Amino acid sequence: MSDIIHLLPDSVANQIAAGEVIQRPASVIKELVENAIDAEAREIHVLVTDAGKTCIQVVDNGKGMSETDARLSFERHATSKIKSASDLFALRTMGFRGEALASIAAVAEVELKTRLAGEELGTRLLIAGSKVESQEVVSCPQGCNFQVKNLFFNVPARRKFLKANSTELSNILAEFERIALVHPDVAFYLYSNDAELFNLPATTLRQRIMAVFGKKLNQQLLTVEVDTTMVKISGFVAKPETSRKKGTQQYFFVNGRYMRHPYFHRAVMDAYERLIPVGEQVSYFIYFDVDPANIDVNIHPTKTEIKFENEQAIWQILSAAVKEALGKFSAIPQIDFDTEDRPEIPAFAEGLPTEPPQVHYDPTFNPFKSSSSSYESREYRRPATPAWEDLYAGLSHESRMNEPLPEEEWELPSETPAAEHVAEAQPSLMAGQVVEQGSSHLQFKGRFILTPVKSGLMLIDQHRAHIRILYEQYMAQIRQKKGVSQGVLFPEIIQLPASEAAVLEELLEDFSSVGFELTSLGGGSYAINGVPAGIEGLSPQELVSNMLHTAMAKGNDMREEVQTILASTLARAAAIVYGQVLSNEEMNSMVASLFASPNPTYTPDGKPILATITEEEIERLFDK
Figure (cartoon, one colour):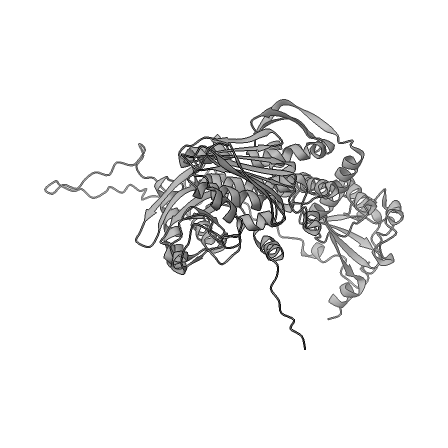
């Protein structure tokens, strides 16, 4: 039997490594920018074209590389940051795996220009698909200049699975923000298709956070600071009143590296227990400084998951630090007795005579005498004896218990005028579920609409039913591009971070289709000049922000799916709430519109709208 095990070629091995390290254009930017920071760069420029699919360029003014180092940097397991296994437990640099440049060169066309400080000439290197095409001496500035073109050009399957430009750009901005937030002493600049998205000069940490997410965040942040022998924790948490369901900025950093840690997230949120509504989140920027020997950063290819040696103890320290910050800045409700209106309590002095309190009462008072002066003006009447016979009238055997009541004695709404069209509007429903012609509706607990059907009694969730109705209306407006917009008297301004503003630019046409009129004012500011008709009482800024965050979280490619997200979010926001009393006409219209929709059974996100209690189930309740 012949041997079947063989060594993979370097090009194939590099592509396999690239599958772990390089997942999308954002991964390339992360690796190149982290290398620039390790090279002690004080100014880093990032330029992307077509969300990085066509070209990614990272320019820094770091130490640069020699001709030999430039060539070796693209080899597998080549690194300047570790020399022995013991170095893995004392890491203070960003990257160390030694596979980033080799992985990038395996799936893209790479051009590198680099020059060491003090040298007159630098090196230019061209690599495509792990093959070195040329290497020559050139004149270039100090530092490194990487150009990565045609990402995944030789792996069509990987390139096909890249998302839309708006989604990939959103991922690039997310990675860029994570690095910029942890290195405020470095100046960062980001350009997309020659448009400047970020201009972040070197500054303090608080100023860097405001530069990334907006100046309004400055009034919302509380300082967290604690220093122990085990860990040093610093950063900021937001005030409880700024909580919201979507769009919060939540970041953990350890030794200058971004990480995800659900366990520590729970510690922060526990400090806000009973201070914010259930289901809402707050922003936080927490920085950990621990001994590198007590953490393991190499348990995930992208190094975003980090294992701590003393997680439980750090959990307690973090939770206590956040609670202390909330209490120190009076973010926790408390009773303040130090006020101007506090009662005067005289101090006790020995030797002063004490007098018992004087009690004043009327000795002639007798509550049992009707002639008492206190009761002369009152009149007491004995309640009339109830007519018990009237309460049981109609319960005799000769009564009309089994006879239907005449229509004038019913306490039910009037007949449904559109009921005769309901069965025609929804032929896909089972015959036993079609609303009976001439039937009426009742509202129960301000939440459900009860209506008889051929098989029994149907319960309709009024809030979810309205979501389905509005969703179909908004989708029709988007497809026809006939969104009804209602102008506002005073335009409202919404300020968005650069990452959200870049995505909004891609979705402006879809927002316009549902009735929003948005005008860019520059710098991430947008004026809301018009809103969709029928959303009176809702905050336009909050609505736009929620729709945008939902679209970013879904990360869908196709325009139809993004439009579905917008229509669904808008329908949920504009639908009637539980507890709203509906008139007969409103219930009739809602039931008719619901069964006229293509899918009256479920909401756009798959929640049931109606349920049926069969006639047999009702009769079974009375068989006992």
